[in-house]
Length: 129
Length: 97
Image (cartoon, rainbow over all chains, first blue to last red):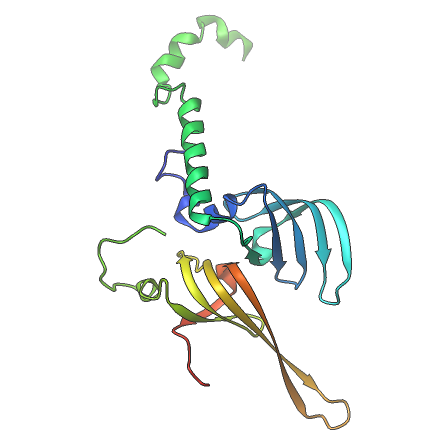
């Protein structure tokens, strides 16, 4: 969770998929399988976890699976739901990540410096190693 | 998706930038073609297309006559994210009809 402008996901369109987390969407794979379900998680490589999924193959055979992990390289298309305002969703997620990054830094916005850590280690710690 | 201040065309990706918000033709692997409005793209050629028509072409060979039957199937999607590793080429739409 870096600062805005430093996040790797925001340099590609993966952040759009990540903004759709929690929504129901249709994912088409390279092997012509269609998976409809709720996007639980998406990482920077577009690997996704889909919950409550209905998998349909080319012949129309459907199968239900509660939890699926799909490697990002297997994805061909992601159907974005019609009623979603993408720009707003991406911006909202950015704000959430900004706030989370700020909270992680203790609200000060500064990473702990090595000097601070050294003084916290007692001299007798070497004996344990 | 960032707006560019410098609008000079320096590299091939800049040519795609010129097509933003325009209708484009995309040739994909597995004999697929897309025509839609380009909303966004990135360096991997992941794209977001709006009002998309997908054409899938398949060739079947007749068992008796051994002639090739070219079949196409079309479908329409309102808002589509296309993963870049499937993209072969991007072009302004070809007006053949």
